[in-house]
Length: 412
Picture 1 (spheres, rainbow, N blue to C red):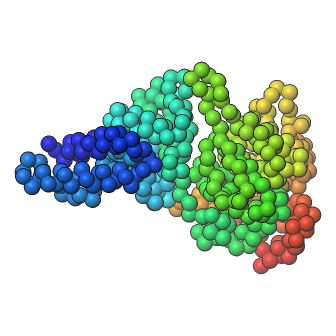
Picture 2 (cartoon, rainbow, N blue to C red):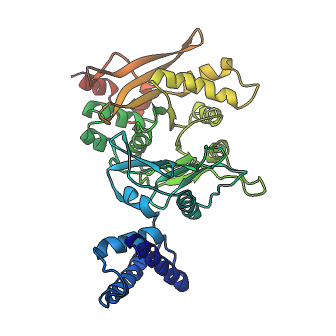
Picture 3 (tube, one colour):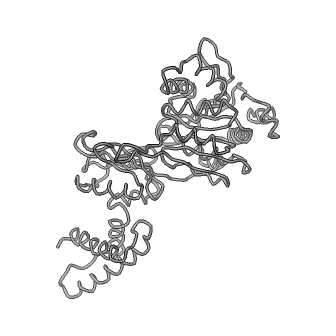
């Protein structure tokens, strides 16, 4: 037997014992590890007789068996590595990872059966499915990582797999200051704006840190307020004492039972919210969010855009997808009166995620264009105070915040 064959066979022994005892391998990892250690010890005793090859590294063997039974096989080491931000499989022989915003081709080689088995095991704990009628899937792995799969037939040749890891390096705006993502005056301004109840949109590209920033902004929401979150899959985690988190649901095998993001936003309004958070706005749910914000309910959301001003343009475009009778003459002024601040984040050439600009929406519309003012902008690599002033000064005053002093301090 080759060492690789031994590992597979031993892992199968562990799997058999797990099944016999009725153990949940995902939730009872410690028990699986004890069983793996017993199997390795028995194998090691047999190796003394010369009937099998000796174990070179018992710890590594046990870890490999646990990964195969409880984890996700050869991918588990990347999920356990805190420096790895994302893992994706283009085809079985091309497995990539991202570190510090840069992609790397790994030496990991899989087979098509390996990939199918991994996808099946990942989806088992999520309650979501992948088949001919449902060739795309978004799901959350037990560790909080986000899984996206495109089935073979839609993706050419093989299943395409993306695992975006949830790496919590920041839980508050102060943590982002420590990481160099924003400055102390900017953190103070954003904290005050959230406490005052301004409506904030976080924009940026893929992997620019939108969800992390939204989490950190949410940590500034006063503990006395009730927060309802709506997401495609659970990603927002900010430890608020009064929170209800909701996620979308796929349709069942009969093609029924789907719960889209639009429905979640509408239901959130019936749950006595003080704040509403939408993890990411991508489509017609933007209209429902705008209607909620326009009705006086403070909220925050994120969306993909290349700049803060392009985010405003996109906010004016997405609601048009909701229905044919929704027109720009209604949407544009609604966006202007509903959105207060747009915080744009970007990732630089070195993989550093930073707040790139903060734009205030004045509420005025000129020639179908929403007027905005830059409050902070990056110049020469530094986030600097500009002349823009945030709207709704009365909300700052009601929260006991001296806005003039706050902005004057930011200019120093």
